[in-house]
Length: 126
Image (cartoon, rainbow, N blue to C red; front, side, top):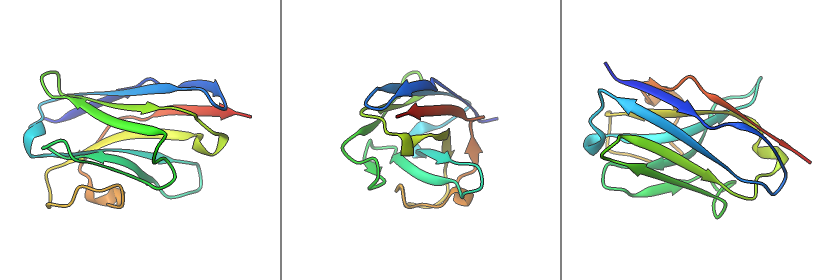
């Protein structure tokens, strides 16, 4: 069974940095699209960044230039380095993965991902 465990959230001041991690097990990373999503209560879950099996990355416009997605294939671990955090980044962040389809993009909708972490809260104060 595929299992994802995300962690690394916390509370920071605007301009600060955090690194989120997602440890995966029972997972074939070479054929998967992996992603970070975020969700604010009362709003839809939105894509933040994705990384494909070959290492290609894609970012939402709102985080481009500030966030970096990466993975460590030998440990099957996904990362999200978040720099220059702003209050509008406050949300619960989730790692996700899917084997379905050939499109790996931050524009891909949450319902098309099959495996999810439990989420980790990021709070950014002014």
